[in-house]
Length: 423
Ligand SMILES: Cc1ncc(COP(=O)(O)O)c(C=O)c1O
Image (tube, rainbow, N blue to C red):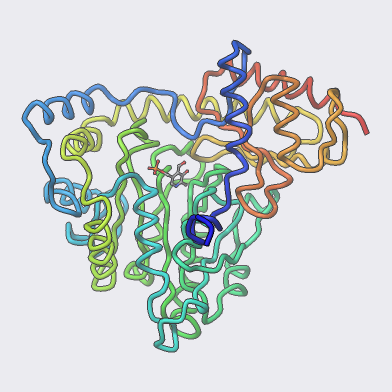
């Protein structure tokens, strides 16, 4: 038999964004002035007090393995914050696990939730769907598929603010439904559900759980909780009492505190079921990454308790940039976009330009062609929408985690590119 990798690894979809980003890096290495709008992380440095606390912890030799779920002090702090700031009931430190980034928290959660007993009591994978509002961040679907889930996309549009409606969710729920994913503020659209909208979605889940989908769980990715711009207040869907026990809330310091490279995240649950999920995730972590570094946790605790000012400085900068990019791109012909309410992305619909040919002679069949031509002809890197869900072929994602000068120059280059399109 020929040498091969596992079917699981082979069947993972490669990211369509990687090609553009690799080409952008190669051009930059050749000295080309590439403007990169692909960044999925803040352009700020981690807070000084967080760095100082981590350095002090290293010097105090906090360099050994710790408890699998994270040390008691850190988990207690997170349980307190989830209770007081997020309003989630029934969270103790035994309902919290600290993981290597939010990605690992999601990965462990999906491994724990999918392939559990189906509604008929049997371990039947074919009954387990991830209900995924799209556009959605690129890794939700592949990670759920690795856990054996089937992906059911719930499409949204710029006109609907990229949000699903309670009716749409209700219509999508079947006995196969296992997880509903809520990501507010959203990557890649930067829109947010209002508290009333979240309560309405929670009511649909509660009702379905009593009838056709008793094993239904909400996974709420709240990574952009602190990067919100004012018009819509942030709310945790896990704070709605009727769904608290069936909600796993996921978060981390990466985006809010500019600590992406520290690789920290956490997941929390509520009540008996929440404890069981976190316990199972902890077993999985014990057999994989073991634990997160203790000295990173020292930095995280400082960030969470002493960095209100840094948080506000970064939030205010993102708010200003959100206004700028929205007004610049809204002025360009043929782009439809929603006003960013949180996070740091815009996701314009470029479909008015599909089917045209670029000034450099490239036929634009979809977002990947649009992004490739924009890079070659205007030295501007954006992420094509294909990986964010089926309808992503009509969109590009631009991050505004960059300077206002870069945003202004990017909008100018995009304008020149669009003006040169033929057909
Ligand atoms: C919605 C969302 N969830 C999770 C992640 C991954 O976060 P982390 O870097 O903490 O693993 C990202 C990163 O871009 C994201 O946008």
